[in-house]
Length: 384
Image (tube, rainbow, N blue to C red):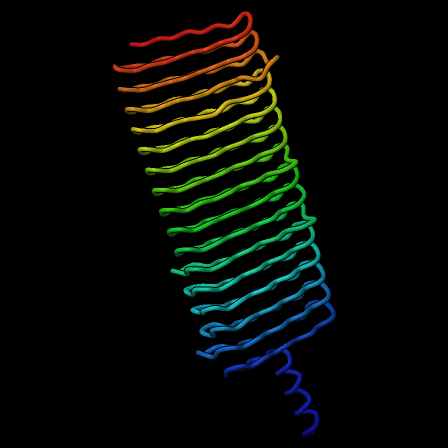
């Protein structure tokens, strides 16, 4: 009877893996289906390590190192419909690594109220989901999310604090990414490869930056919003029928947008003073719409190809526009510019045939220069 009880106790400890002390290491290995593994290393302990590995379906692994500095968690699951959860609350200089191979898996990583932490989540397969949270004043943290060979997968990041970094990589089709960063001097970078992908980014604070790249993309969309001052955004899309929607609310912001392909749509809205927009489009039947409200704003850019349209609207004072459609042999391009306020300047140029420019300037002390080279072009200027 004693041997039976001892064996049962050892099995329970191996499954639960609860350790409360410093410099401990716990590991668990499970093979099969519908298993559960749990490791707890908490209560102001330090320098701990946890490793969990599961092979099979419908398994769950949980590791908790809350209030445990200079520690790490590594979790690996191979199979389908598995769930992995990492908790590192109020922790400093610690790391979490999660790897899942299969379909329909869920990964949850929580690093709250800490600094100097690293979180890395990697999923391979389709219909997977990652939730990665670094918030409650977390700062100087690093987060990465990778979804490879994935279709219909979702990744979500939340960072609340200063000087945080985020990187994401999604490969294949119909994937979605959500990013929410609140704080100052945060940095984000994401890449998506494939068709019908979506990226949704929100940053609130000052001196933040975010880069978005969508390659080989068709029917994909980027939505990026920044609130604050001295923020920077850069968006690059290659493919067809893609949509970019960007907004910056504040002063001294800069947005850089490039699209390559046909039938792409770009919309940028900037509200505040001394903002700058720089945009470029290569291809056919593309549309770029730039709206700026405030004083001392500027818009630079152009398009190369056939049947492209640039539409710019500026409201305020002392704003500047320099835009061109200069590709030799291009045709049927259009520039529409509206400037409402005092002291605006505009320099517009077109090369090719059957191009059109419409300019409307309302109020006083405005200036516009339109240059066209080619045949059957039209230029209309209205100053009131």
